[in-house]
Length: 90
Image (cartoon, rainbow, N blue to C red; front, side, top):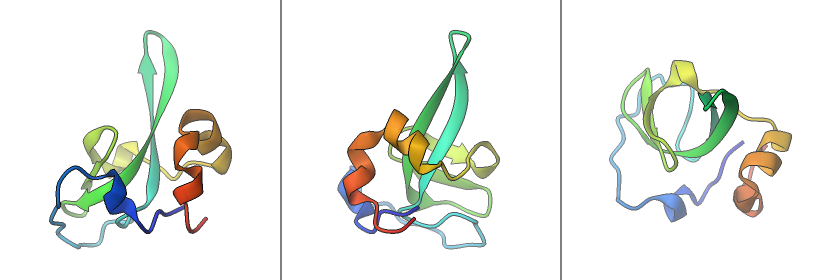
């Protein structure tokens, strides 16, 4: 799932180190995490790739790719429906 105009969500002109990272710029990712004993899924858009293991998103900053995965369309509809109209590939 990708947003081709991902720079719309960036505050800066980030420079990426294109490596063997499994995610690419504009990919939509989910970071499942726990907040006050409940699961709170954050949906972010990849804005910068640092190296093979780390990237930056618009919603939760820098993160290790081990903590991320591609969300389902249902998860995007539930947790961040505002980006649905910008998603160009599924």
